[in-house]
Amino acid sequence: THPTAEAIYAQASAQMPGISLRTVYTTLTDLAEMGELQAFSGGSGATRFDPNVDDHHHGVCDTCGAVTDAYVTGDDSLIVDGLEGFTTNSASIVFHGRCAECTVADSQSK
Image (cartoon, rainbow, N blue to C red; front, side, top):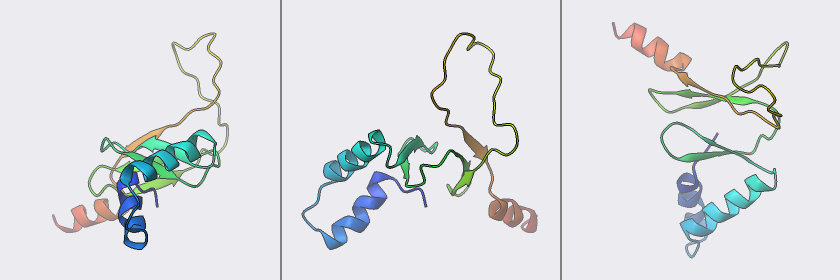
């Protein structure tokens, strides 16, 4: 899964009632800065956290909010106009659309 700080807080506070959302968010942010987590915007405005730090991107369903890991296959180089002379350290791409389940559910309801 790719939970938000709020979702992690909800689970953590059930076992640690004294924990604050600020503590959870600060810890997650620190872990992301140390390279132990990936942090990315899932499109809902909330930052999502991913323990998978391998080189990958994300697909976000605009209908149900599901997040899926997406891997580049083949030639993983990108040609981007406007970045001539720019040295890229990393790239994070978030694909938006509809997941397979929502696509099937929509086609069955028609």
